[in-house]
Image (cartoon, rainbow, N blue to C red; front, top):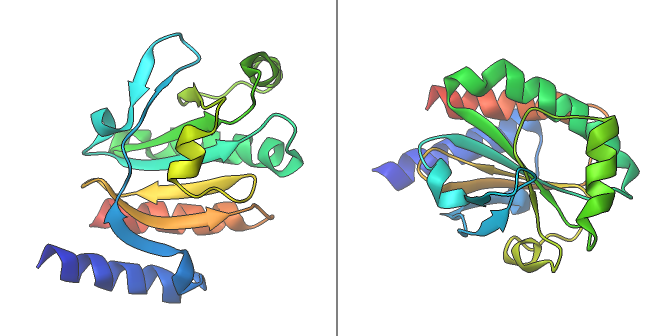
Length: 164
């Protein structure tokens, strides 16, 4: 029953957002633990029960810099409804990310994946890459890249997942 609802929602997302069905996934999201910008470890599994947008980004990535403020707005709009953003920085030297975040602060958690272990788990092939995970811990969408207007699609996806 749950899987049927998951599939129906996935089809709805694909059709309503014009997304490729290849971008959709209905598998359990790979768990990971990474060090955060606060120095604490953050584990994805601890966010179960929330809708999680994981955004893989790098300080050298122009589209990432454009997208981060939109993600912060999205986070601030929906955080009280059980939504969070988890920014996974892939720079080998996390101090580069810290410099960028000093100039462009965000409200959501930032974690570091300097050796690319988590990026490999999620088959990240482009910067940025955004992954949506539902409240039950299932990966629902993998969206590579960013172009103007994607934030509108993200908002629709978040709203659909909140309504589930």
